[in-house]
Image (cartoon, rainbow over all chains, first blue to last red):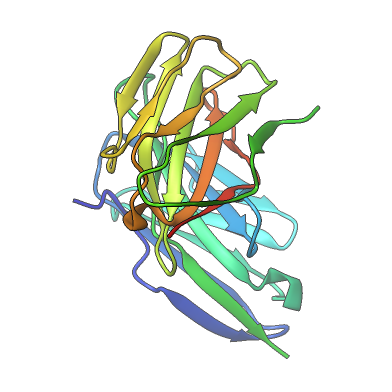
Length: 116
Length: 111
């Protein structure tokens, strides 16, 4: 049973427009969420995170929104640039150490393609 | 600050051979993970460790073994390689309420 779901395997967005990547989770114990970016032949790298005490966190062109009641988070990239083309993973962890046993749970990823 | 170091980067194994994928982190993180990523798929957790001497199975542990004798090292052992283990393997380390750091990956082909 997938606890973190990214239902769009791929997303194509025109350069300069907004990219919105979505992530849903089912475990109500999750309270810390992260986004990772992965280029081919490289390991994932951290992008941005959000704690459940917030509903929004911004870092430059990247903003993560959290809707706890809907168990949904989204990553907004504005404006989208060619270098943003990558696979984006959503990850979640529970509110207390050991409660989620394996710590971080990842979604399957969304392949974002920025078209010129 | 090296972060998470994985070796080797590439390896070709014959069916039935064994090998160990090495993973070292220098951030004193308690949590370490091994994932595999198959083509077009997400990250699947193989094994994880919450500290030296403590390991546990993840989603896809069959065919693998791990040990955690020190905080820094978390090697992954493949005993009898099978074609189904052809994948890219990532090691990661993490500590509470921080970001996880990933190694560069090991691309393994079993023929």
